[in-house]
Image (cartoon, rainbow, N blue to C red; front, side, top):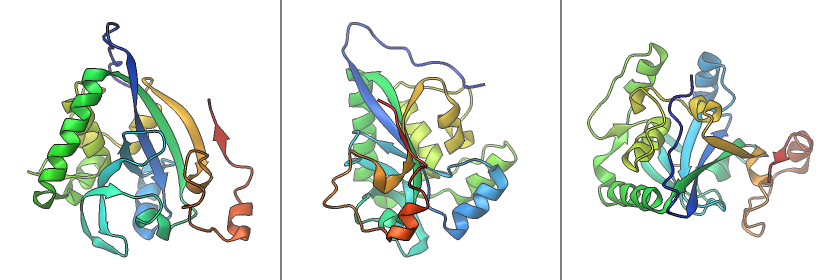
Length: 213
């Protein structure tokens, strides 16, 4: 069950927030994928369709998975650039101006206190057993996205954010799938900044993408 739908105040013009789901193919994410059987295992909150303002909980240092917490992700030079064959799904969520503003306020609060936050690794095991393991100032990726949306007035599930998985976003009826395929084939990225992907790697996925407009 996807949970409650988003209620919009029709007196306000619609805006959009986005959730980017990814699968980098790292050892850690492959282990998660083997347990969940879901196509994507990382979730990020994007404030724009071009993915210039992208936030999540994950690696602070791209080459060090043990250093993790609140991160402002950079699709061009951050962790994703180390995994150029990352697959993704981009979901759009219609919101109103107040909800968008609250989402930004929530992000700024995390930015101002970024050093206080850490990765909720223990919470991942709680998800496996459907048992909430909430820790102070600790989040895993999908927990953070769900929590940020909830604080913005977008409570999408009748369960704690610590029990929300990346696949839950993909299955929720309030989200619209607007792109699915290779991350660096996403047409709204800045082509001049996209890392080069070996042609034989890109060719193996050439027919496996879709853009929904």
